[in-house]
Image 1 (spheres, protein in one colour):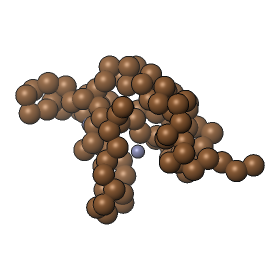
Image 2 (cartoon, rainbow, N blue to C red; image 1 turned 135 degrees about the vertical axis):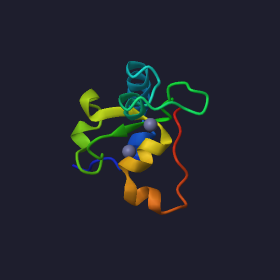
Image 3 (tube, helix red, strand yellow; image 1 turned 180 degrees about the vertical axis):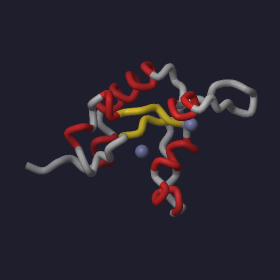
Image 4 (cartoon, protein in one colour; image 1 turned 180 degrees about the horizontal axis):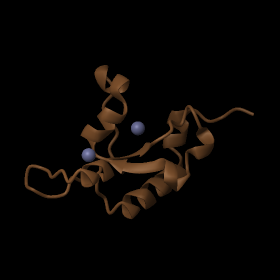
Length: 97
Ligand SMILES: [Zn+2]
Ligand SMILES: [Zn+2]
């Protein structure tokens, strides 16, 4: 059996629905920023722009839709979560919706 590629997975309706659910669960806020009490320029809680897999899809496709493996992050925190990915330019960050 062949697993779907990550791109295929991210385009799927199951993922889109799950992503909405996770953003809702985290109240649309970046959980990392919230944990450290970080605020944005206007002094408001930092909004999440995407949902990140704690364990990468490539490493554990079976965890791709498990809530505990998913976390809403802002772009800065997401870049920190993927230091190698942030280093290379060219791939624009994927925003929610
Ligand atoms: Zn953040
Ligand atoms: Zn990620």
